[in-house]
Amino acid sequence: MQTASARLEVRKPFSLFTTVVSHGWYQTQPFRWLHDERVLERAERLHDGRVMLVRMREAKSKRRGHVQVALTVAGEGASDPGVADEMARRAAVVLRANDDLRPFYALCREVGALQHVPALGAGRCMRAPTLWEDVIKTVLSTNVNWRQAVVMANRLVQLGDPAPADPTLRAWPTPGQVVRARERFLRGVVRAGYRSPYIMELANAQKSGAIDLDALDAASPTMSEEELFKALVGLRGIGKSSAHFLMNLLGHYDHVPVDSATFAYATRVFFRGKRPTEKQIRRRFASYGKWQSLVYWFGRFEPKLEWWEIEAAANGKRRVSGGGGAKASLA
Image 1 (cartoon, helix red, strand yellow):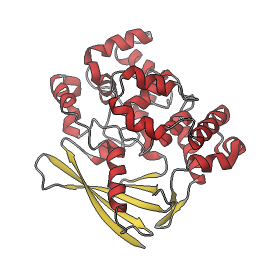
Image 2 (image 1 turned 180 degrees about the horizontal axis):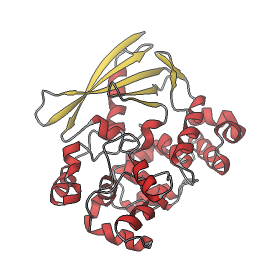
Image 3 (image 1 turned 45 degrees about the horizontal axis):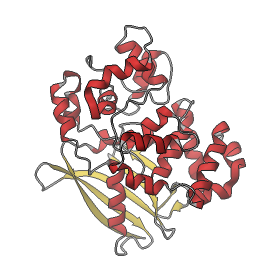
């Protein structure tokens, strides 16, 4: 088995751990977080079908003002030209390593409830390397508690090819692999229920070229909020809140994803136990402009595994997108 290495330089403040646990994707394969080692693993499928095992570890950088992420790539032909560089490119997408969040961190230093964010190296929301994976996992996370969403996502990964360097990890399935499995697999094995036809329609559309999530992903940095939102809600199974969540993963932070967890959090923290309207929640964060969703998300963040369970316990319920305990008021 061949191995290769690559490195990413990420501008401070940055912490691999706080980025990984920014939300629950790290609990879903092809990701695997090795907490004792502080290593993020992932199985990644190359365009030619080979599957690599990628390991990411935080390291000191010789470059001033930066943190290094060291990558080890293992698999058949891992040392072939371009393989390690491609894995590094994908890792940068996953960690949002190229984002310039300096204006957000300047805001954090001015807002008492957010001053912990730069100190923790928080602020980046980990995503999948493809919008295809992010969209399907978002569909599976809709109208279900988070633990069930994790189970469904990890069942779906059974369709992906195993990494020879560690067959316990499989690459995220391609649209073609999902199509060939048919809706019967989604209902009977994944237990995706009403989401099954949505996932099958998305897989067929991506496979046939009726939609192009890779092109949408690539174009998203230059799209307006309105354009990106319209494109996302046009996808089967993606509603308003899910679209705003995906926009957050794509680096558009203008809108808070308002769902049941958002209502529960706002009711408890901002409105003295009285359930607000969506308009009231949005008005609460409007002054933060293009950073609204990051202010909302990291105002709740705790640097712990499964930090969102803190709020779920406080609310007496377990929610899909619940966050951690609140800091000081963001009023």
